[in-house]
Image 1 (tube, helix red, strand yellow):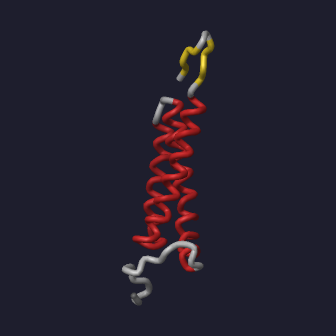
Image 2 (cartoon, one colour):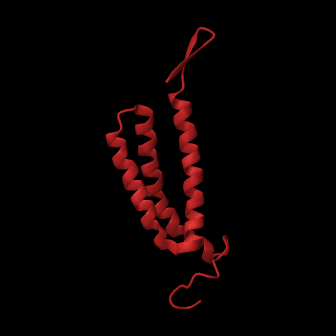
Image 3 (cartoon, helix red, strand yellow):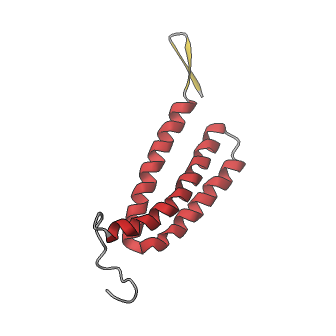
Length: 108
């Protein structure tokens, strides 16, 4: 994607991709924290599904920017599997709040 500005051609592909990656990282981190709070570390399954879907979609999309964003989405969410599991340890250390309504191992 290009635009003309003062007789210069500017390529917007990099800035669009960079902004998308930044937003995806923020969203996936937020989902990691919220998902672990409500569902526990089993929420990693949602990250696996989104990660595989994004990775597969990157093969099927012909537009280079959308394909790149889909691929990055896939890999960010695949990395989120690790982060979701680690989030439980952060909660146990007291760095994040524990959900008092969620039952773990049969004990409230």
